[in-house]
Length: 193
Image 1: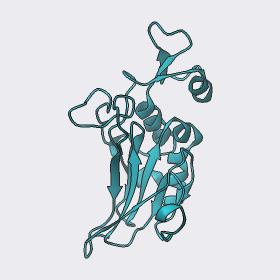
Image 2: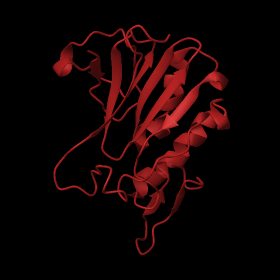
Image 3: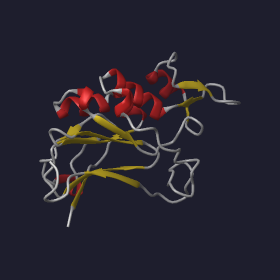
Image 4: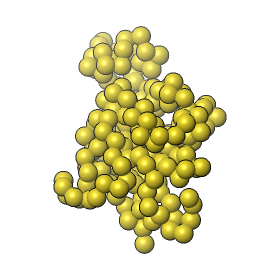
């Protein structure tokens, strides 16, 4: 049976190695990304509630990363930190961006707009709400991966908006009760690498 290792996420840029033992904080190390080569049978996971789950894989080395990217982590460079922790050429990395809140539903205020940068192509005015913008979190993260050297053809298409697709996904902004989605990656026992 596989073991699922989760992080105690803090909306930051800390990257944790898969070899870190479960210990403090209820058995969860603190961070927002896993990066390294997990033992077969150990799944590395993160929880999301509208934030963007990202999985990076370098098949030749068996190294992978699982990233929780909210706006703070995306702007702060959590994807770049995870890529660096993998220690492999970014052009050989495969990336999958999971379901997250889309720009159609992600209304943000001045704090986010200031952090992202007013001229960002991933911000647009929110109709009828002066001082508020729509933020394209998946688009911004995709651009950061491309800038870091991940190839366009190695990034899977963006998944649907968690807020819009109520039949398939939980959304923190839509739901009355707290829930989470889980994204995970690992290698089967006896399988690759």
